[in-house]
Image 1 (tube, rainbow, N blue to C red):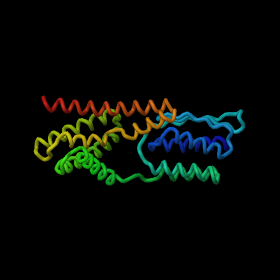
Image 2: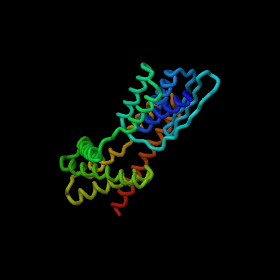
Image 3: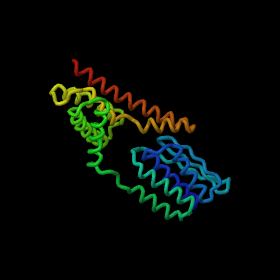
Image 4: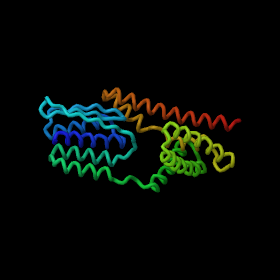
Length: 250
């Protein structure tokens, strides 16, 4: 029973990292560290962006296995930091399994940033990107509004359980329409700069970074999966932008 609990909570720790934007190698290292810290002789894991498979043995003969399905992913670096800290603490102090269970529950219940905070910083990020790409202050204000709208739209579409592909298609189209309409009404000056400011919020930067990191580390399946995910997100944004751009000239 103790081995089963070790496997269970090692898988849970890995799942938390993967769900919150962590790399594949970090998940495997965490699972391995926890297993070896509690005396397991064999700790093997295979991690992909959507699942974790673990096989462990206490004596090298009887094997315990577990599969964890990862169905949702977001970005919360505080969760990753806390799980890493717990993994190091397990290696140094070897707390009881009950303590590990309680700490994982505490990490699960960490509150993310409030809706107001994410709205404000999404808006600010879009405005700053607009300036970086050559927009003027008038464009900055319009792009800031666009960033806030994209944040609200993403949450609304997520609540409706719409696929990420369609969410990015709609987001890309909205950026083009918003930029064109704002310049037509002479609220903004550069439609392209305003649209780029909004689109930058949709660009899969973390997926691209993790894909490269996994490929360099030799995790080919995970790296290719993340790279394909980033590729299709980019395609979705481009499709939405192209449709809106084409319709605006009909």
